[in-house]
Image (tube, rainbow, N blue to C red; front, top):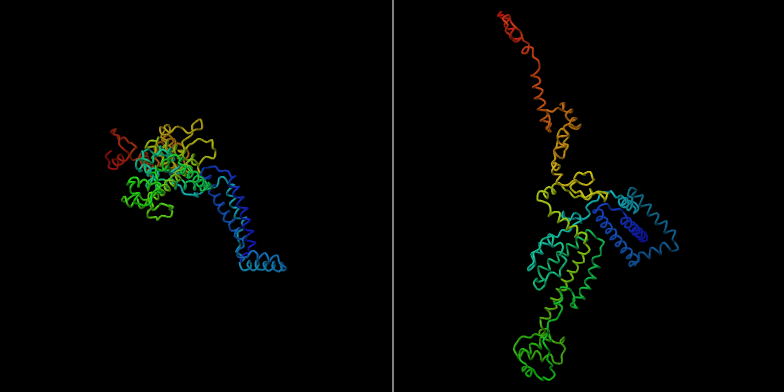
Length: 499
């Protein structure tokens, strides 16, 4: 069994190293948005580990099982040297039995972590999961919540851009025309769950529970006072009927003279059931004479009060949820602005540009420019004379969005027809033709496939072979009559003695 004192020492060391690592992580340079998000996630992990270690230390210091006290007595008693050598013998025996099993000290473990922290160009893994629309925490993805919102009854239909601007403005939603129950409660819960999840992924160190606790107290106070914006009429009590002084009445029969409506008003004022005949109402009202309402049976108590209390509690919960969403929306101001600009960019693009961007544009945080002054260039457009990307229309005018591949150049890709035509006279293509044993002449212009080049070369060689000098055909002779014939025909005529 490990020494309790050694465990305590090790936990103290781990706490100090965790504190040092958290400080270094906060001071480390973050070059990209992804690095910032991952940094907060790592700090959150270190902080959670710090709290776990602290809780374990507190448990050991309480010493409920007495193991710490026993060990302290053993090492601090009269036989402390004997105890020391006994413990040393146990350690040596353990290492002798397992010579290859060496525990990794905390120094080595945290040194690896610190080495990664001080390296700003380290590869950043995906520590948390984001949708494509969220772009690793840069934008919000509220499409699911938007669909639920526009399907609420008596809600003015708006586009997604307007929803992004106003999703936290609950005072614009009238509860008189829109019943804030059922589907509305489900919509609020979905919106809050998403925002809390987004905060946990992008700002894990933000203490939302403390924020919510403070908000709940403020909202409850204003709600009960009837001053909470958007919920004023819910807190104001309805006009109550006037009560009846029962002291002059000696029996229920005397109360019957007040009539049905007067008895109903008196019962409503006391929060009792107000239905029934004249006699039943009079008896129910007279039964309260000389008694507290708490002493009466629950059966005679009105269910209206119970329902009103339940409705009030539901409305308070909805009001608190709305306040929670508004608070988170205020924290995520930067992300909301970025989301709005991102949606505007997408809406401004044509259908063809959107399709092309889906194929070509890959938003990877690791490829962000280190120089913050570098121009925004997600499409990787060529730079002009001023160091800025050329306009996209000029990019397409020159055909730079078109790619040409040449197999002879080793499957090299060329952007635009101009660069493609130019490469046939450059060293790479000439070298590829020499490797094939083919001269790089004009006959092979616009040929990029190795097979096509070889077939054309064989055809040209055959034609050249046929065009060579052939004495039997091209050498001419003249006979005695002055006729010009080929060499072969001349020799045949000569052998036959016809000349």
